[in-house]
Image (cartoon, rainbow, N blue to C red; front, side, top):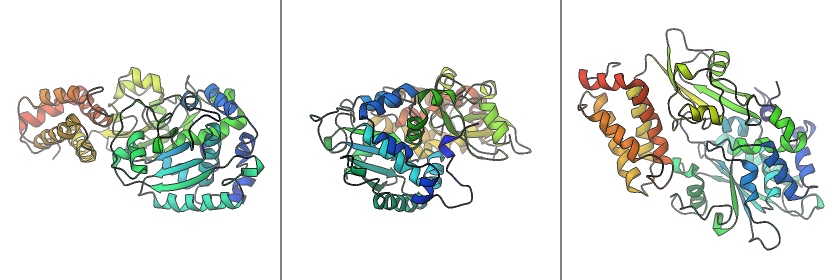
Length: 423
């Protein structure tokens, strides 16, 4: 089984420096890209069917093709790497950044060249300080080797890369809020259109791309679109970093073919449930996705199959619910987080999420009211897609509405017994 994303990560050892990365085949894709026409790089990525790994799953090559090109395009153009990995339960990008920092630099060179960007920012979660140190070192080494900076390798192409630590807010992971934050503004989402490909950072054409997505690019350039599509078990190309957290025997993160069944990841790689615990459900792609239950365990983990089951693959990092954990308490904890992280820009999110949080808190404390479940269901609709300015609130109510669907009896017991049955 090929694992291109993690092929240069050496468990228990420091990541490669520049020379070691070169000897391991690193920067070969960057060398190849610098001899290609930018349009041919975009074409190769489009043909690979690479979809964004940050959660939305938008086709990467198509996204890049929207950027205005040529001498008449406004300058400078920007590539922004979204490394603000703050979704609860998600840690996959950290694995790549800490294990293969030069891989990030090479991926940036390939993507920035494809859209003719002169400046790239890595927007990094501020807690990822170890990754920041490694990236600073990799940027300096790449600059000393002439892989970034002015007139790279005599090609006439110039690229500067900067590392920017996030302000530490969840909303900074939303691409337009991220751009506002990078400009020194409050991290509120922007209205779209215009889209960042046309009016992005400082009003100039910009691509914002997830870390894991970009790590695929050099491998596609070197080995081709057909090879990439052949790695997958499903129609979505490539491999995927899948993770599992919760009361399983071996929580962790693994690179596997896209479309690997949920059960194989949960039982084969995470070792199944810990002794004494039984499986009740899981959030398949981080805290802002809908619960899946036993009947969904044989589904392939890809965009379409998980969506058809009523959830989203999201980041592909599962959070497992067991039979000794209160589902109301688990959802309450998530809504505490989302209510705190609302930027306050729109009324439904600013006022609705605290209301959801307070109702769940009352239920956990034995103070739930007979109509609380109906009120929570109504909030799930009022805060759903199309009702708020950005996707924070719709994502926040996904675990809530699906918890009521699958674990409704647990909510009812809290109200009827006037206590948390798990306390």
